[in-house]
Image (cartoon, rainbow, N blue to C red; front, top):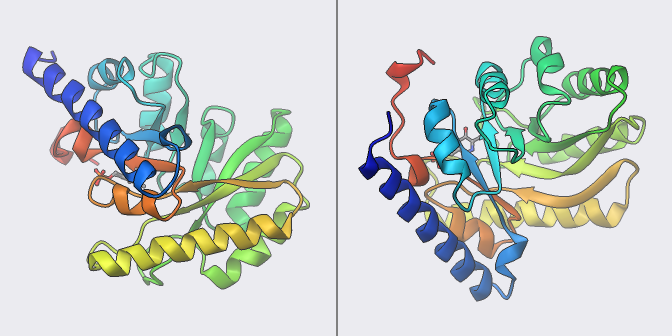
Length: 242
Ligand SMILES: *Cc1c(COP(=O)(O)O)cnc(C)c1O
């Protein structure tokens, strides 16, 4: 059961985040409506997510296929779109294609091919983002900026996917100025890819910025911020065993 206090905290948190989004947008000479709020709701219950769906949140982002399936089947997003933002294993692609309005985390040709094949079978066009390992971290998913171009070219042969843009998670330990630079580099990559005007590619989405750094991401051109902790509070991983 959600307590009255939890509901009040969430309501205030989303209002505060929206104000901060608007402030950061206006400061950067942008319109607040250009930025979508994606609630990163891994480990949150159906009840928490359903309550938050009544607030000023645009989309819900899941990291685990099972949670995406469970929460969409339960109608937890109240008809708002669900996105997949976590690492996607190729053997789970079938459950995500057609269910997630946008897959943020495509970072290999093999994964893109699997998504394309599943989208073809379902006779739909799946929107995806390519995830860039902008900090060059060994342990992180994402393609290198160099390999991004070959993936974009391959996408030109896949009519059942549409590359809507790019996603990144800068290194967690980076100093604020460094993080700002990573966001700026992402914006440059997006601009270059957009200018190349490639097939099956629109490049209108730039998914970057989390609870700690979303204002910085917006200052550099983010069109979608993915926020978890600042909406729902600290995560309790012991609850779900993930
Ligand atoms: C968890 C998560 C977020 C949100 O992180 P917070 O720090 O809780 O805001 C954003 N993006 C991805 C891919 C995540 O896994």
